[in-house]
Image (cartoon, rainbow, N blue to C red; front, side, top):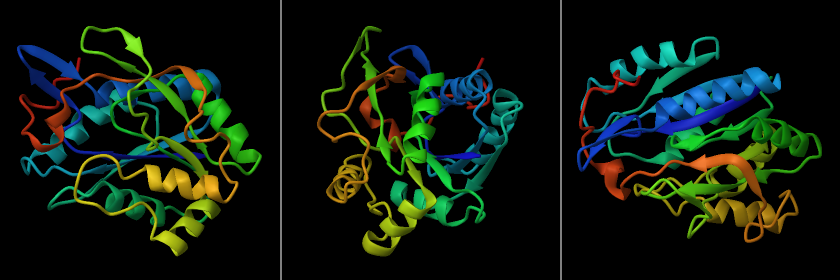
Length: 228
């Protein structure tokens, strides 16, 4: 079983300059399809952080049950100022002992079949994998990201426990972004990474969806259950 851990806050449905942008529902849908096509057994665990309005948690639950369908999933609620590292650490620490394969996944990615099969192959070889990806621009074109993030990573439970013991897990910063590179460097320094952080191969179809930069701090523009 691959446990897919996601921190979610204001990444479902937003409106920007008259456009309706769907993010996390697309991520869930793509993960479900990739798991079904590849035969990889997955569960999705979402840390929902509705800092913008108290009712967001219930709305996330309603659409998630429909979009995830046969993909096993559950939601863990968090409150207060957003802290991505804190909730990811909490999700991983709370997993049952038999969950040994982890994928930390951003809430605005599109997941192809190859990501799951390659990730499990790297884990079987004892290597963590900070997968390379492309980014969608505002005009819809794809290109390598200007500063590739390292928040999408396969690691074993044993590796996470070592990270937790030595560094406290993911940095628990109260800001969005730039918290993941120290973790990637920590893995690389120990020889545990499948690829160097600065020279990662791109996984076809693994794509960061475009969105305005500040949505992590803004109120969702419309009810999140409208995801069709």
